[in-house]
Structure formats: structure tokens, C-alpha cells
Image 1 (spheres, rainbow, N blue to C red):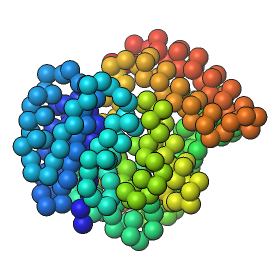
Image 2 (image 1 turned 120 degrees about the horizontal axis):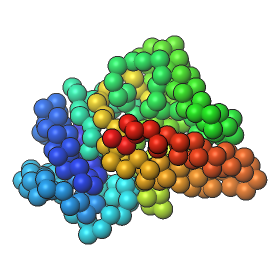
Image 3 (image 1 turned 180 degrees about the horizontal axis):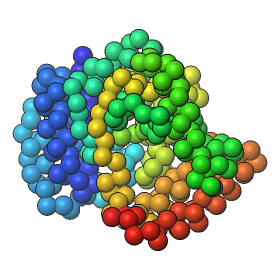
Length: 282
């Protein structure tokens, strides 16, 4: 079983090398096909990362001349990979045990087209999967209640289901395993999403085409999360909500999407208040 792993880097070359260390520790070399796509990084460790990846047989380093966005870079990596299954992995992830084998077995048992793992031990609030945005959820999010309630519901469903894969609308894009055939059928990631919500858009199109997305809590990987976002919390927040609005304009156009779009616009002023907190963005 061979899975192509695509990692997109943007000024996180040190984190990518830590991720590669963990992959080499836990996955046999004959099952590792890694493609690293660099979005015109300028960090000091970039040359070391390029040399390391280029020296590995079956691995590939793709250096881009400009930052084309996360989804577009994932597409470039997928085009240069070889396996029937694709795993898109964030640079700030660390593999533990054979998470790919775990996800692949879950794909066989559940018949899922796209799968996502847990990012730590089981908990009551499960933030890494959920439902697509809608009027009720976005209304609650104005008061910062939407995501916590959604995370509680997902955590409850996971506990009631035991270790069985949980059918969900979307999974977090930090680690996604999916069939190449389905990915190519969907046309890959929508490159008009520069950063954020490109994975939810892919999950939406997958569901619309009759595909199935599952969250597998028995498969785990460590994810630091928002490493780049912590450096500039304001820029992160703006991009995040622009991505959400773009998703709603695309998948809930016209009158039926008017209410959730208005509610998303009301969420940004709440976030501006959080910018004033001294710990935010550090």
C-alpha cells in the first residue's frame, strides 16, 4: 500500500523537517512517497529542507517562485505524486505510529472517499470535524457559541459511536486522506481559495458528488495548529472570515445564503475585540 504525502511549506521549513523525521520513524521507506511544495519561502532552513528532500529516492521538492496559496500548491504536489491515495499534511504535524495504515484500513471498512484523523486523545469537545455552515450555527457564532456547541455535538457523537469512523460533513485540512481518482474527478482544490476553507469546499463538492467523508478518532496525529496565524492574528482572522464568506457565496448563493452571510460579517467585530487581548497573536 503506497500513499503519496503532499506537504505545503511557507516559511516553516524547520517544522517540515520535524514532520519528515516523524514520518521516517513510523512509516517504512518503501511506503513513503513525499512531495514538498514550497510557496516561495524565505526562511533560513529552506536550503536544508530542499537538500534533504531532493536526496531521498522517490521524494520530490517543488520550489515555486511566488506564494500561490495552500490549495493551489496542494494541487501542484498532487500532480507530481504517484500513488492511488493522497495524504495532504500540514507542516506543523508530527506522525505517531502508522497513522496512514490506520486511515487506509478505516477507508476500506467504511467505504469513505475522504478521511481525517484525531489530533490528540479523545475529548468532549471535538474541533476537528463538523457540519457545513448554516443560519443557526452562524447565528450562534456571533456570541462565540456556534463552534463550541458544534464541537460538543461532534464529541458526543464520537463517544457514542466508540471507535467506529464517524460520518461528518468536513474534516480539518491539517491531515486528509482521499482517493486520487475522486480528487481528480472533483478537479482538486478550488484555487480561488487562497487560504482557509479550501478543505471544506472540497468536502462540500465531495458530498454533492455522492462521496463520503469520515472522521476516524482511533487514528491520531499531533498537530500544533495555527503556527503561521499566531505570528499575525489580525491577518489570520481576516483571511479566515473571508474564506468563510467565499464558501457561503459559492455554496449558498442568493437569498438562501443571505442570513448566514450576514451573520458571518457580524462575527468579525467580535474578533476585533479579542485582538486587544495581550495574549492573542503571541
